[in-house]
Amino acid sequence: MKVAVLRFPGTNCEFDTQYAFEKLGHETELVWHEKETLPSDIDMVVVPGGFSYGDYLRSGAIARFSPVMKAVTKYANDGGTVLGICNGFQILTEAGLLPGALKRNNNLHFISKHQTLRVENNDNAFLKQCEVGEVLNIPIAHADGNYYIDDEGLEKLEANGQVLLRYCDEEGNRVVVNGSVTSIAGICNEKKNVFGLMPHPERALESILGSEDGLKMLKGFGA
Amino acid sequence: MTAIVNVFLKEGVLDPQGKAAHHALDSLGFEGVKDVRIGKQIVLQLDTDDKAKAEAEVKEMCETLLANTVIEDYNIEIK
Image (cartoon, rainbow over all chains, first blue to last red; front, side, top):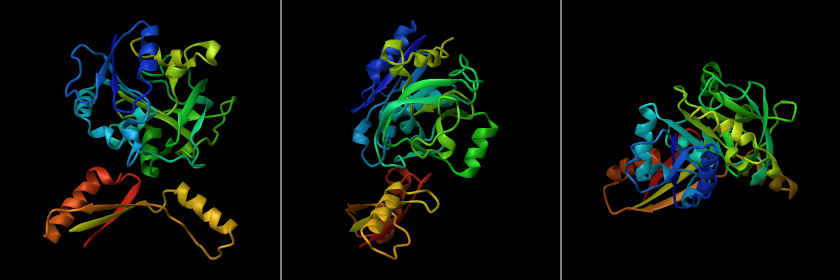
């Protein structure tokens, strides 16, 4: 599989993301945000984490207008697989490729720590290697990770199995981490080809560094 | 002309900054504050004298970029 990893001014997780996919045996290519097209031979696009455009105005609000995002939107609308991690998730919600929005954390802090997550749905390309109810240990690092969606939107997400992950304790019980609606940490679109999550699976690749659960998650793509 | 855009989180969307400021005001002994909402103000200098045109343009700017209408409301004042 070949993975395009986008790069905006302020992106800082692109190399970790490349490392993760290469560790899984995939080829990767960095794509600068000014490119108007994506490489023709890719199987997936990843919008990695960081602070695109300094998070000015709102996280992801400016990056979504980068030339490359037009190509990503077309790619996603044609059924291509797109994953947004952290700032990438924010960019995808701002671009309207994923529902809802990410607000400032309830406690106004930048939260950076290992966090347990419960797998809520696995009938999708991303989490098909995981079990529903399984608890994963993945780092989080964000100030604007407080997921908001209105009641009607939440109902749709639930009904269609679009909630991917929720923040939980080690037993899998929901916990409030940043104020997200029903502790949501990650979602996908209705067609289940666009995925977004605040936690960083690309930072959980080696047990010596705390967890290799990220590998298990990312293995789903291309499997 | 000058356009002043105020962007606030929608009613019903919890405003963590407003809540923190409210709590701080309470702690400082300022009584009788019922609610605090914190937003941002964006001031635009426009190269036009046509108020209607300016208003329409700024509205489009808000819908496209300046506000995220999933969570935010905005109002526009043209001077």
